[in-house]
Amino acid sequence: MRSAFYDRTGPAREVLQVGTVDTPEPGSGQVRVRVRVSAVNPTDTKTRDGTTARPFDGVRVPHQDGVGEIDAVGAGVDAARVGQRVWLWLASPGGAGGAPLAEWGTAAEYCVVPQEQAVPLPESASDELGACLGVPALTAYHCLFTGGSPHGTNVLVAGGAGAVGHYAVEIAGWAGATVVATVSGPEKAELAKQAGADLVVNYREPDVEQQIRALVPQVDRVVEVALAANLDLDLGLLANGGTIVTYAAAQDPTIPVRRLMTANATLRFVLLYGVAREELAAAAREITVAVSEGALSPLPVQRFPLDEIAAAHEAVESGTTGKVLVDIG
Ligand SMILES: NC(=O)c1ccc[n+]([C@@H]2O[C@H](COP(=O)([O-])OP(=O)(O)OC[C@H]3O[C@@H](n4cnc5c(N)ncnc54)[C@H](OP(=O)(O)O)[C@@H]3O)[C@@H](O)[C@H]2O)c1
Image (cartoon, rainbow, N blue to C red; front, side, top):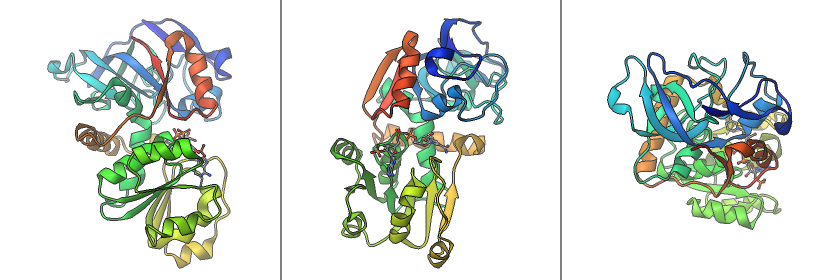
């Protein structure tokens, strides 16, 4: 099959290759998916350049997320699944308890995953949406639901037009929360509004806290992409007993113990690779319900052919607004 791959870490143009590799066969409990579209996440570029240490044996086919059709099933999987259009999650999790063929990501014509990681995509959903869900939607869901549903609560989503932030806004709204999103400018403000945020505030303005208080006196949960930069704002708004969930690690904050203690606050951290597979599978099913109800949408996308996968990685590294997709089929 045609595939992108790398056998050492480094800059995209130096290590990413496109060529022919053996087509993987599905093992017991697995399905093989003919991939149509693969999506690039920051985790894929950080793994490829070595920033994130995720050791691999031999060759790694990159990318966790994608969309395609099941073309073969392994032992113990219902043969009726052949032909199903599916969205994929954590296709290449490495040494985090994944499938035996754990390094076969979605940047290839075929990808093999445990059957629960190929989730039927509702007919109404586009391939673009299916390809974009994976890491961003699962992260958003986990940040919002760990410790209880956000229904009826006030949620602050920092960076509401980022990939995770976008799904945090949409999933929180779908779950019945009041959603405030912060962004850095008008283009992203428009995206967060389209996603359904009840209030969108430019976090670079001086009176962010007051603008948010005009809609909600306090927030119960913060989905945080930049903890060090925003902890002061988050604590200014957090209700007693509230939770700040952070999923990104650009910079380490100074922990204001007394303020956190006084607020009876919970500071939670999320790394998707370490979340139990059953929990992620359950989240994937709920996300699919949200898709079928029309609650989720793709961000604007930038598309690249497989041969230009290095340019696709560079687009993610440059901080492109929206999602970067690689067309395989
Ligand atoms: N722990 C996990 O399991 C997990 C899962 C998914 C992603 N991540 C990590 O999370 C990060 C974001 O991923 P992504 O795919 O959502 O990336 P993305 O689409 O590039 O979004 C990042 C967003 O963060 C916003 N941002 C940056 N600084 C901010 C600040 N001070 N306040 C508010 N917003 C700010 C950016 O908006 P502006 O440009 O407007 O500031 C941007 O929209 C990456 O580092 C990724 O590796 C971790």
